[in-house]
Image (cartoon, protein in one colour):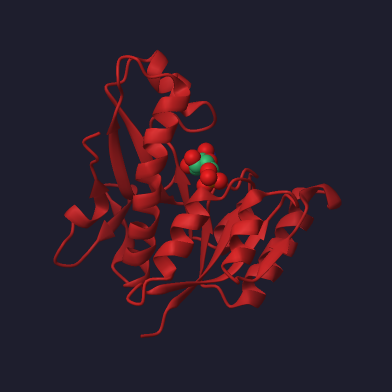
Length: 220
Ligand code: GAR
């Protein structure tokens, strides 16, 4: 089996990276991590990568004059690793439109809300403040607007009446760790295609288990 090489981009804790490391350790998983890249030298996820024996690279955004120069260095590192898919996993830098375009439909992101609700920061506070009965998480193809793009997999996670942002975040994070490997698997199996449906882009998943393969509903 030829595995799809992926680059995982992080800025911090790296628990979603860990979920991908664990998935890639399974003999039947159709992807392999070619590079873990961080824009922060102190990101804990780098230690996770080293522990797993994976190649790491730090590209500190502070060392670059502008986003174009930073993104050019990212691109060189990712391309040099042989990765064919970029996975943003808590990577907290906005990417330039030309970088996003270059990796169009080959770059995915995980976000801790049921997009298109609550893009950006403080998702859990906002979901609680809005009285949402469900929140969740989304893996989607990246477009230049923040936390936007064709949705690949989602998990719905119930809110509890006594939730605070921390408790809800922890429950959603468990679902994140399930759906990120699901999405990578679907892409690696060649089952995800972006199509224009009624003038809007949509990620369509083919195969016997679709559409069940694209949602995950913890009943916690
Ligand atoms: C995750 O909850 C991820 O969904 C979120 O950052 C966290 C990173 O955690 N990403 C975003 O908010 C992107 N807009 P991790 O470093 O433990 O994977």
